[in-house]
Image 1 (tube, rainbow, N blue to C red):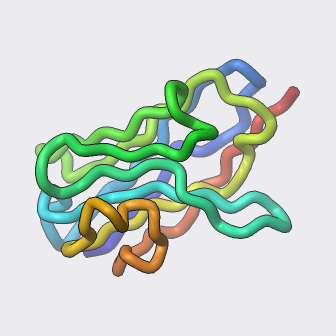
Image 2 (image 1 turned 60 degrees about the vertical axis):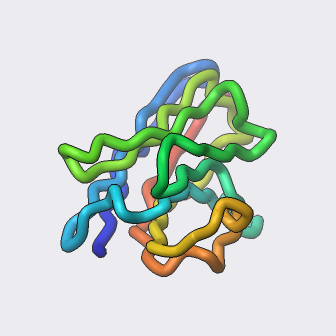
Length: 125
């Protein structure tokens, strides 16, 4: 499966953005999907994930209650709705997919076999 992330941009603190991750080549509904981000000088970190079976989701504590992961199987696309953005949320956001990610590994980068290129989110204070 190929993944294409988009939707990044410049937003003021307190604003919102919706990132999209369009999949091609395979049906994204058969994959667990995740969003990760990497800020300059920092390691890539887990943000949100959704298991392939059912609506089970997982979020990093830093974004819980502000970010929402969802998928539209008809459009073969995964979304990350980001609200109440702060400058600390600025980073390159990447989506990932894996056909056999178990629930306990949703937060693990190594569990995902396919990665899209990143999309840059900048938050001004």
